[in-house]
Image (cartoon, rainbow, N blue to C red; front, top):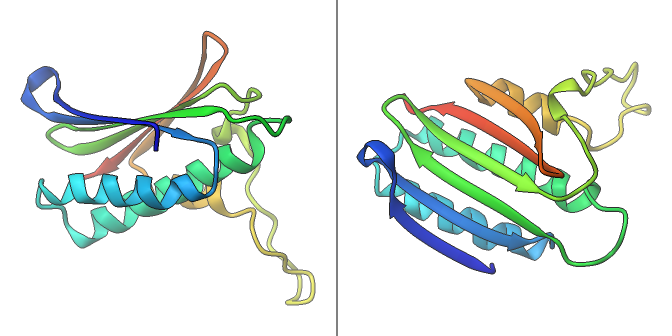
Length: 149
């Protein structure tokens, strides 16, 4: 974890800002910090599950696929509450990739044809109320809204 801040945001709702390196080991600390922060707002078990799943799938996609070099890159994560949703915004400087345009996974015809992986984008879509992708100033920006109730 590189940086963290928790600040009041517009409308009086809290916001958590995190900057992490694109390394697998950064995921556990990020998840712990987000869930600890979320616990202060009396989340439902379903909300915690959905936020954890979206964090895991989105961050692992960035860590594994966003960069063609082996250099360290930073991922910005902002988590904010509003009246109805938890809003997660992921920003990275990786190759352009709109996960919302990814085709749905093809179901294997047998267990022998099944391979692990490839379901993350579909899972994020199922757990989110909405998701929006933008390419802004050379960065991928994915905003995911998760229903609080």
